[in-house]
Image (cartoon, rainbow, N blue to C red; front, side):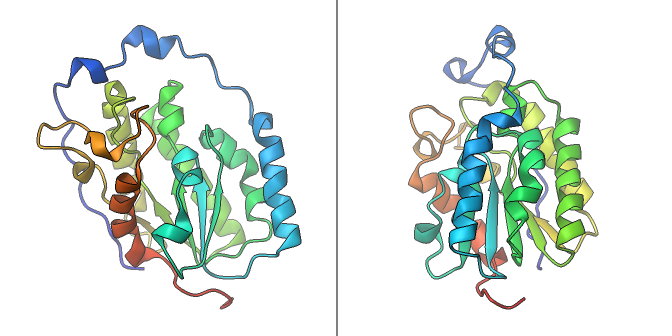
Length: 234
């Protein structure tokens, strides 16, 4: 796989008041419940795989709501993609269910987006990067030839106060990918910022966290060259 990594921008200074979360806002967020809150959703994935066994090859998308809400057929027409995102998930949730999600899948490429909710729950950049590496280890134990593409944590108005954590986590993941031919990352951070250095509002829904079609189109352009275009090869 051709690597598609670029250096992250320097940590941005300043910001706009309406975008910022106060320290008390962040601290007030309740602790996330355990992975069992996704049991029914994971069971639906398993039922779907039993009813229609997935073909080998192609692309498997895993992660939180930015994955779940991605209209893959529209973004990548004719490209074999399976969406296994579950909204609100953190890295511990993804790791908890990784083996069950992967059970019947042998994709050429796994696309993963996770860490946004971890950040919102007070987890550190180091924890997020360590969980990414654990995910890679688990995937390659079962699928040693599968390529993993990390979609970095995006800059958003909702979590602008946590941008330094996001950039640090993204940078740590990029460093960990060095000399790993089965790993890559796409470059989205700078492209999602406007001339004022703030997240571009047209890329986001009113909650300033989830993306519009225009936001996904920006991701599509960068991810498309890294996807597998065939299925049934393994």
